[in-house]
Image (cartoon, rainbow, N blue to C red):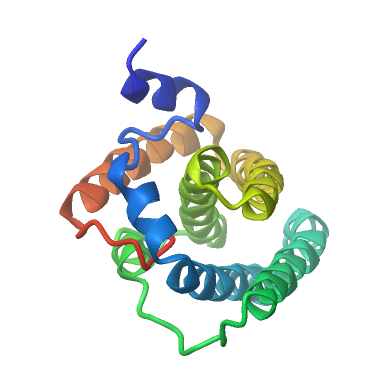
Length: 203
């Protein structure tokens, strides 16, 4: 089985694997990767908070995502520990072209359940891609401490992906959610093809 097929089947159905060169470039720019990763975790926590606040009337969203907020912020704190341990400052946030392009695919309008589903699927996709990238780092970088760290986060992000997908399937028509998820996956693959290969970004 090719790596691409393995990725589709085992890595959360992503349609395009990360270019294998990315992890080597990332390792040479580990300070930038850790800084970008810290902000990714901060944004993930903020995104969950926004969903809870904007869709407070969906009790299952509030109940499921409240602990995820705490987990994502915990990840932020752990990335900060790795930065400090290596003598790296946090630095300023960078524009996340990947997330910007994904947000352009969100369908506007429809019922509140439809709107919520769009954001849940976008977040699921970001978690899926993060999970895949964490797996690459856990398997290929030389820093043993970071290898272990990224393996732990890979497992956690996979759980968050499941949270978002299952919430969407429970809130809106399951067949429509699955059809829309396929569209999201296809779109994300095209986005990835169009992005410059950079070692200073987690996505």
